[in-house]
Amino acid sequence: MPELPEVETVKNGLARLLPGLVFTSIDYDWPKSFPNAASDVEAFLVGASVVEVKRRAKVLLIELSSKYSLVIHLKMTGQLVYRGEQNFGAGHPNDSLVGKLPDKSTRTIFEFTNGAKLFFNDQRKFGWIKLIPTAEVPNIDFFKKVGPEPLAADFTWQDLQGRLARRPNTSIKAAILDQSVIAGIGNIYADESLWAAKIHPATLVKNVSASKIKALHLAIHEVLELSIASGGSTDRNYVDAEGNKGSYLKFAKVFRRVGLPCPRCGTTIIKTKVAGRGTHICPKCQRLTK
Image (cartoon, rainbow, N blue to C red; front, side):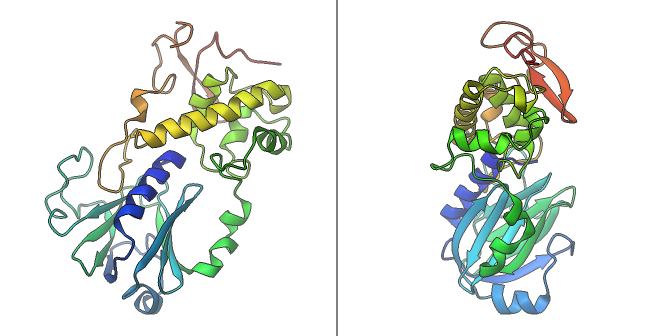
């Protein structure tokens, strides 16, 4: 599933490409991917222009001139790929995962007055695009429950400590994967951040010292910022807004590095299971604290 850096990368691309464009038509083949009334689409999407593209946690928001917004969750395999009039049929020259569009995974196609198209591809069909009044977006249950943005300037290590303290008997990995604790962190960046902070993922929150939480807060920042700068991580299906793969996994220290030496101490990286997820650790750098 795309995590915060991947969704942020898609947002950055769409924020560069879409503002000012006007929707002319929408076509979809899977109602669950685009569960919107035809009357609303005709009244509030067709003829509306894109005002701004935003992200909250792992959700994309495309604000429209009609005072409605497209709320988009990519879920496991969703992709949003923009094609200008000159190249939407032939594919992008830098593609690795996306070729000629539309393809068999294309669920929704948005067309603009300039001839460009935005393709929503989703092999597993779990993702969705909802058309909602912009004023109502903060009232969506997910947005009322989701935790703070980890890269927000006002999100301090003390804030992280306070939110973690509500789950003292939860493993630290399960806690930071919980979207109500902190937004946007998934399996890849949990493993990478915990390695950087020298914390075993199975350590209970109550056994993680303040100094370790401070180190974890810094590690989350550094790992997420590096991934955003690298265009995110392409593990399977993820691509950016123009169909390009992300390169963060070239810089990963433990994720997908089973059997390789730890970059810090040379001990062999192993894979275990924590919080029901495959988990990559250095058994020497990340000792379990009890």
